[in-house]
Length: 363
Image (cartoon, rainbow, N blue to C red; front, side, top):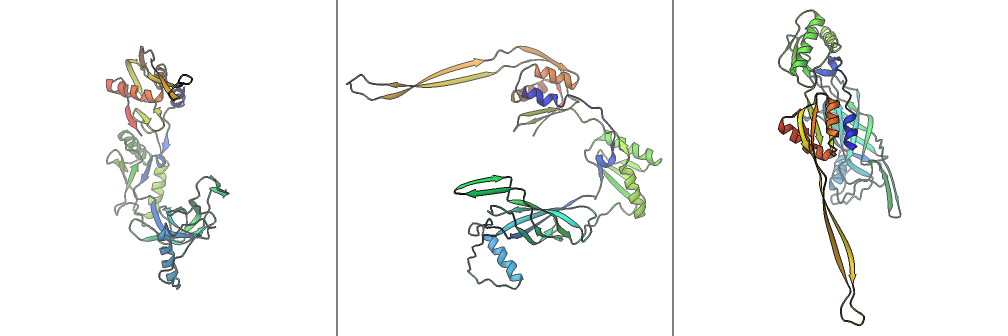
């Protein structure tokens, strides 16, 4: 029954519908940039890093205090409980300008029990090139909660990480080059497909009434855009709103080896084949008895195990499986009465025999 539920959920195949180009592709260079930084969270209620096990927290605090004009005597063992070392991450969207705000995620890198109630101190956020693009600071919002008393504790959700809405301010922008000197703009499909690329090119040229688009390959389309910046933006906005019906995805069966899930898309077909499926189970039942010596006799009472081993094999019959549509494929496979784990082996065998017309993918 578990397998039937998994497959019947996707048994209704919907016809392909038109989508806007902005949902199928993106312009080259228009992308997010990841930022990362190392900082300190202060103001914790005794739930910070234990500096004996996380010495870098004390070193970071000493370096920060020295920059503020405070000198900590060498060899001082600061038993800090209200400070935690954290990593701060953020996504810098395209066209972000200095002064704009970004949301940041804050995660503990030491052994802090909770970041609830903490304040992130000024933390530079750097890009892959090592330059600082934003500065983060603010009060954390931690979704988790916990309490402990008399040796007992309870915890709801994660407390070693939090989020600061608008917690970073952009310091410098990342230049974005929208097209070359001759106005050439590249449109990159999210999923490379020659059929979809051909349809996108035809739809764009039909919209503008002239050949402004040409496919370089199955994933990149070159556009002949205007040289003027304002006209180029209007041109790109118009391209994004064009409707295109993408080609159907290739037939594929996906296995999730960790959960036992099996998912088939609507393009999967099954040529006529005969399958025999049966289960072999071994049951070992051990019962313990007691052996006692005769009255007034010499000997010791011992426990004697009695093992009963039984081998059961489910009857297996050859069944014909066939299906030209997803519903027929599902019904044919459900008729085998196989569990999802057994079904993976059956589908692999059907693929090897040439009956299953689909690509197998294990995640």
